[in-house]
Each structure stands twice: as C-alpha cells, then as structure tokens.
Image (cartoon, rainbow, N blue to C red; front, side):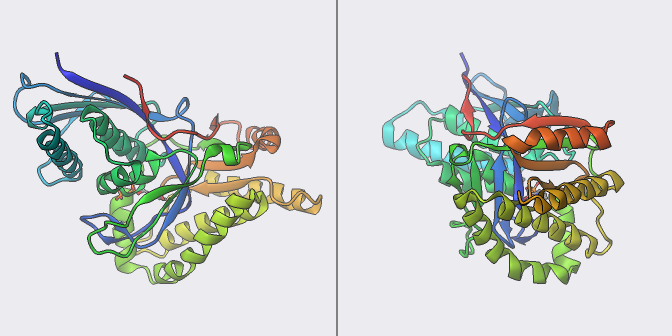
Length: 349
Ligand code: 2P0
C-alpha cells in the first residue's frame, strides 16, 4: 500500500505587504512582512501526498483536479528536492524505509477561487511542503520548513503558522535567515475577525511574481517604501502585542495603500484595485471617521492584495456593524466572514 499523508493549510492575509525580491531564485524579499492567518474551515488548501515504489517513475502533481507539470529546477521541484534530501539523511541515520527513492503523487484542492487575490499560492505551497514533511516524518521545525515553503512561493512561508506571523527578510545571501515566525497566537487577541468581500473571482491580470519584479526594476517609489517598512513592522508588532486596534488599523490601511501606490508607480502601471475596491476604502474611512468622532477610535481596517477583493479586519464587537454597512452599500458582492486560525497546517490523515 502507498504511504500517504493528508493535511490542510490556511490562507494568510498580509497587513504589511511583501512586494519585491532581492533574489528571485531563492525568493528573498526586499522587505519583511506580517500577516494574519485565516480560519481553515472557510479558506484552505487540502493536499494528499503519496509515494510508492510501484508508481511509474517521476513525480506528479494535480491542482484542483488538473495535472500540473513539475518542471525540473522549478519552484515545486526545488521544494520536493530539499524535503527528499532531508528524508534521505533521516533514512541513512535511522535505517528507515527508502521513501525518498519512491515516485511521488501529490493532489491539492483549494476551497476558494485560485489566483483571485486570495493568496492561493500561499496555502497551496505551504500545504505541499507540510504534506511531504508529514509523509516523510521529518523532524525539522516549522521555522526550517518555512525556509523551504518560501522557495515555493514567498508568502507561503507565513501559512505554516497560525495567529500573527512575521516573515523576516534576513540578511544572509543564502537565505538561511529569511524565515517566518509566529509573533502572537490567535488566542492573544481572539476578538480579531476578518470579512472578505469578493469583488471579483476572476483570475488576476498581472501575476504577483511578474508584477513585483517589474516594480523592483522600474519603481523609484519602492526605494522610499523600503526605508519605511522596518518602522511599520515594529509599530504593528507593538500594536498587536498591546491589542491596540486603532494603531493596528492605521498601519494596516496605510501599508495597503503604500503597496498599491508602488504598483501604480511601476512601468507599465499595475492596477489591482477597481472602482468597487476604492468605494469600499471610502466606506471604511467614513465608518472610522464617525467612530473616531464618537471616541471609539478606528473600528475597521481594509487591506487589498494583488486583486480587487477587500479583506476588512475588525474586532468581534464591531463586525456586525461593519458587515451590515458592507451589505447595505455593496449588496451585489459576495461576503465571507472568517475567524482567525489558531494552528498552521493540520494533519488530517
Ligand atoms: C503579501 N502578496 O504579502 C503580498 C501582498 C500579494 C500582495 O505575497 O513570487 O504569490 O510566489 O513569491 O508569494 C503575493 O506574492 O509571490 C504576495 P511569489 P507571492 O501577501
């Protein structure tokens, strides 16, 4: 019988955005980033990895039922190669069955639209890495696995953890310190919730990988952004530690706007947000203006990734009001309310 592991991996949404690589093959970012992991009941990638000596030679991968080519030297192949190497070392040390020599079959499924700015590559690559680590019974820590997931897709390194997660850009040329870590568990601030407004589930026009490369090559504003992000990383970490929503919201919204500004400063410019996205910004800003005047401070924080869909963070006590406002002004948009996630990847079988 084939050896098998099935796991699920969560989606993460960044409050401080990753946008730009200083090394495109090792996937080393131009700045650190920070994200929140969303509940897997709502959004997840589920992946089964199998290996068996009777399989025909070569590794095979299916994404949402469609076979994907595992390109030699490509990102997926790199992740598989590293994990297989770690298994080989373990087999040598402990005299284990040589699973590392068996062909692999990996099938992955997302329960949300792929490539619609909902971070499908993050959960997908995190799921790939964790399913193989489970299949191979690897002893490596989540931090070490994050170094591998990062090489599959940058943002994937953050999806190995639950709660509030930082990806440190690192300084080493080999990427050995460009690692993700949990800075606070979900339980630290359990009232935090997210509302996803699916403005469009169409595949995005410019992929993150090519878009950020173009930004690095052409945007002068990016250089300015890079001088500001370190301070933002420490301020938002502080806001999370202190459970200061007003400050958290201010930094999250500012960084989302800064990211979309560098997209606009790219040549040719990249537009991820549309008119509905901008109207959602106006609505949240208005809500915060009123709540500020009433002495509650900011009560909602929008953020947009590489697509038009909005993610709005709010504390549980305000989420009813935020959701009602979104439904009133944007009745045609799909809305998903999600809690945060305690765990990173889960072993299902
Ligand atoms: C983020 N995004 O921090 C930012 C915000 C999109 C906007 O990480 O080339 O799919 O695979 O490393 O990880 C999208 O970038 O790009 C992303 P690659 P990835 O979540």
